[in-house]
Length: 150
Figure 1 (tube, rainbow, N blue to C red):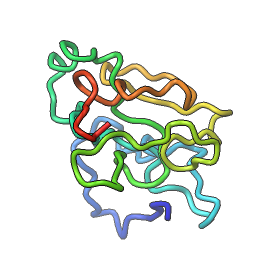
Figure 2 (figure 1 turned 60 degrees about the vertical axis):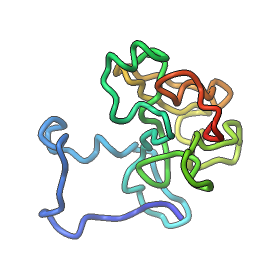
Figure 3 (figure 1 turned 180 degrees about the vertical axis):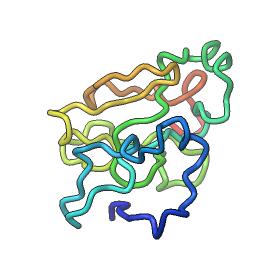
């Protein structure tokens, strides 16, 4: 089921980015991030990369020396929880697969933006890509994991 919810009240903790996004929660919500099953907007419309060996917790210079910060995906259009990896297996976890799935409304959704979805790379640039553009290497800080994670 999709993650749809509204904070209980204004004391809801907003996190470290709150001051930098002008206290505007819309930054985290795609205007087209709507769950047709519940008729509610998604709580968060984007998922953060949490694959084993991914970019989280790494310094920018580590990413640049690895696969390159401009080649590593950190956030993308998503429709379930605010993080994404293959949660059907125990860690180490690779990216959710299959990449190409015309009916996927959660992991790499195509229905929001005319058969593409938006991704944010670790260097800060954003691109719109198709499911067929995804490669394992895009999810990892260095190389591609071969220990069952990818």
